[in-house]
Length: 109
Image 1 (cartoon, rainbow, N blue to C red):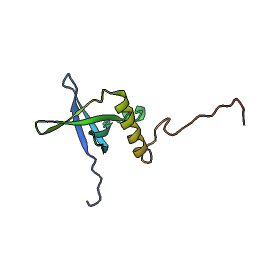
Image 2 (cartoon, rainbow, N blue to C red; image 1 turned 180 degrees about the vertical axis):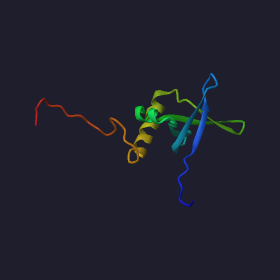
Image 3 (tube, one colour; image 1 turned 30 degrees about the vertical axis):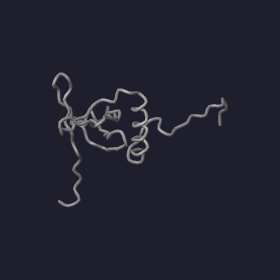
Image 4 (cartoon, rainbow, N blue to C red; image 1 turned 90 degrees about the horizontal axis):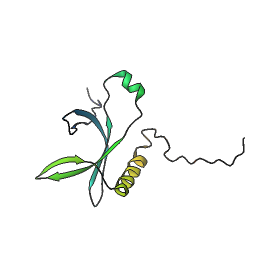
C-alpha cells in the first residue's frame, strides 16, 4: 500500500544483553558529531497508558567503519543537543515544561 508509514526501529542491547526497541524520531548533525533522538517502542497496550514519553538521546560514533550509539557524558553537550531536539520535535510531540514559563505574582485572577 502506497503512503504507508513504516517507522525506523532500532534495537539496542544493554550491558547485560537485554534488548530494547526504539523508534528513531530525529537526527541532528553538528560540526562535532551526529546525534539521534529515540523513543522506546512499547508493545503492551497497558504500558502505553503509563508511558511518560521518554526521549533517549545518543551520539552516533564510528569505529572501524561501523556505526554505533553511545551515551553523551558531558552535561553541557547533552543539554545543548537535547534542547535542539526538543525545539525540533515540540510541534509533533507534547513535552512537559518545554517553552513554559510560570509566572506567579501571588495574585488570583
